[in-house]
Image (cartoon, rainbow, N blue to C red; front, side, top):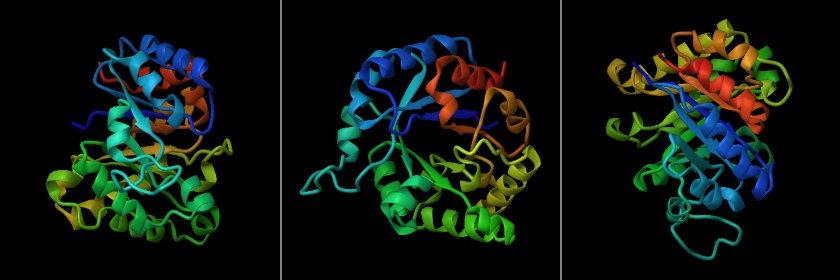
Length: 253
């Protein structure tokens, strides 16, 4: 059975004091949650302090991006070893905002995923279609291409460590959410693709999150779907009570 994973992407929000308070609130609010992995994703400047605040708790820390090099003349970037030093165990890669605003490519996401794995970081790889692609019935074409590209050259031993996050771009921050049936259809399609790329046994081990306006009110229906293994949460992750409610609703007693 795949362990659900609920990750909060804080994006460019929260100064240090508030970030630490939120992290502590999440740890306290989800203390009784069983069999669910809980992750928070602060800004770079808050990573180390948030990780310190969460030391000894069940909550992991994710960076929101990463460079492939371990050092060098890459102004403004952070290396995988720096993220490890800061206390990260996860890294979010290929978010649609990174692709849209900063020109990230499928090839670049693949390179980052391989480097993350090599340094013991769990990559949370984001994929998803635009509204135009959804309306043109090209969702699976787009998502399948992104998955295959992101996992290119990653072997069976490592690919089971990857977390995929299906985030329809039209549902991110819009208040719109794919229906549980729509989300399940895409998740099932992704798992079928993984079976083709690897094997059914491997495909059944890989966790696939849903992201896009996830809230306490809709998480139960989403997480009940057979191929949805958690959520990558945006706005609702910025308040301890709402994020904790999502985590607790996803826990397996």
